[in-house]
Structure formats: C-alpha cells, structure tokens
Length: 457
Ligand code: GTR
Image (cartoon, rainbow, N blue to C red):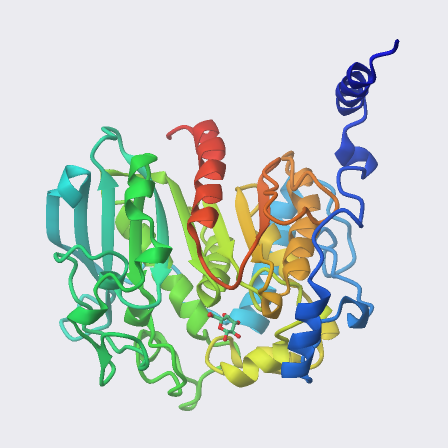
C-alpha cells in the first residue's frame, strides 16, 4: 500500500525546494487570503454612505512606478535609485504631501537628562527622562523623552521609539514618570481643562507592554506627540511651527510642513539624543507608531535613514494605504477632517488621487533596504487593510533592486498569519483599530531576526 501521508510530505518538501511558492505565485492564491466580512462592509456602508468599503467599487488605477524617473528613464541599478530616484520621490512627498521640515539638527538644541534611575521597575530597568529643548531658549518649544532600558543587557541596547497620544505618564503607572504639562485633548480620563492630572497615570498602558519589551532585551523610548505640536488646527501658531517656519509675505508656503511633518521631525530630534547616549545602540533604533502616528513613523523613517527599522501600525490613509484605491478614508476626507496634518499642496489632490505623482507604496520604498513592518486590523476598514498590503507589495521591487528580499508573498495572507519572510513584514490581526500585545510580539520577532543580522557598527 502506498503511504499517502509520506507522498504528500515528500511532494511538499520537493516543491518548496524546487518551486518556491513566491516565484510561481502559489503561496497565496487570490482566494486564500483575508477578505473583509461582508456583514461588516454592509454595516459600515450604511453608517457612512459617502465612504466606499466595497472591493467591487474600488476604481481602476495605475500606480506610479517607483523604478521610473520622472523623465521616463527606467531605474535599473542601486546607484541610480540612491542618487536620483530616491531623492526625487522624497522631494515629491515633501512638496505635495507632508511639507518641508527644517533640515538637520537645530543649532542651539539642548538635551537635559532630568531623571536617571538605575533601579526602576523593581530593578528591571534603568529609567531616564530627557528634555530636548529645540532652540536652547528657556521659553522655546521642548519635548520630554521617557526611556526604559533593560538592566539585564550589559551592552548598548536596541530600542523602539514611539510617539504616544496621552503623555509619557500614561504609558505606565510608574509614579516617577513626569506628569505631562502639555496641552491635552479633552474627553479622556484624567484630563481637566486640557491638562493632565494624576488620574491619567498609566491610562494607556495596554498599548505599552513595557516589562515584556524589557525582558526581550529591548529598550523603549516614548514622547508625547503634543509636546512637538498639539494636535488641533490653530493655523500653526503653537508647537514647533511658529519657531521654525519661514513665512513669505506673512504667509506659510504651500509646501510648509504640517503636523505629521513636525511629529516626524521630533522623532529625528530624539534620534539626535540617542546618538549621544552610550547606553543606547543607535544603529538599532526602531521607529514605531499607531494610526496618525503610524503615518508619522513611516515619514520619519523614510526621511531619516538613521532609523534602522520602521513600523506602521494601522496607519491607513496618508500612511501605508494606497490613496488611489479610495477605500475607507480618502485624501479629501482626511484633508477636511485634519487640515493641519499635511501641507497645503496636498489639498489639491482632494478627489484627484490619480494626479498625485506618488502613492504610498513609494513611501515604503524610501525605507528600502531597511526592514519595515506594516500592520492592518480586520475590523479597521477605515484604514484600508488591502491598500496597506498592496503598498507593501508594490514597494518590493525597490527592495529587490537593492538586493534584498521584499515581502515574499504575492497575495494577502489570512487573518493572524504574519508574513515575515523578507525585509517587508506584514500582518492583518483580528480585531479593530488598536496597538495590541499581539502586534508588539510580531515587531519584536521581526526585530530579533533583522537586528541580529545587523550587528553593531
Ligand atoms: C482617524 C483618522 C485616521 C487615523 C486615526 C487616528 O480619525 O481618520 O487617519 O489616523 O484617526 O490617528 O487615530
């Protein structure tokens, strides 16, 4: 009798060795991967009739080719990518999407370590709190970085840096974390008259598994995004904008940086600090963000190549999702709801996504060949999970040109089946718009893989 099981095992092993699924496109036939629940689609379409949540109604579109220069020349080698196409794409994102931030480190920027505790969290961590004063002036804009480093690691530590929504003191109940004095959005526990009080301490801890991160040998650095620029539209009068803006006849330029540009710039300033801190392995810094801060992490990592690994969690429109699909949140919708996030020029593309000289796969391509990880969530159709996956897939040719394996699959994976085959990682998780322990787990697994290969210096 023929042993069927044996035959199947043999054929599977044989075919994976000789016919890699990636090459033949068999790994995920279009039908095997994730699909939005039809009930959810129906329900959402009822709630927001102006928004498209149906795959059938995605218009036909052609993506700009990241490997063709704007004069039509094909990019066929790493050198042309580096010296011509990459700068060209960066410039387009600056001019038409996020706006132009000041270049480099501000001249008189000053760092002050105002807290250093080597026995924090019952001895598990070293805690540091650092004020970054962007102008060096007493009353100038500043941000506080909260850092936890694992004491078990005796060499400089790789870290994750993440902007937070509620203030550094909300990420952990540790009573020594400075209570933020910055402007806070109303409506959350422990916020009165736009100021945080003790009741908000540790409020956001579910999104920050600090102890788990430390036990896996990573450090965590976090900054309240409102320190850099409060997240409301005030005509760019607060935060870092008025200090660094160069007005033309009293007006901001159409390509002046918006809030995402400012938050990303703040992340680069935290990197300036990490470079001065011997306890941190500044060659292995991962920048991470959720939602609007996921858009920010991508833009920060795209511009600043000191970030070794970039993670976008549920970033959606203006982040990892392709704008041309017009699925869930659109360019017009985001510009209307959040006029301060992008630059003035971006508004020209309201309803005209096909005219954009870039799409978001090119933002991911700017990160190449560094590792990047993009996540979606099953119920987060507003962020267009398929559009996020397709952006990863369409960024992959740039990774390949640079000699690095990109995504490693052709079609969307199934729910909770992370793709971690190349330098582009991706998963779609069960559940809604959130940053969960599951997500962190994947980021750390991916970091283990890529950071180990990187070594130091
Ligand atoms: C939503 C916005 C999204 C996303 C999200 C968030 O209201 O439409 O683009 O960024 O906010 O940041 O939580």
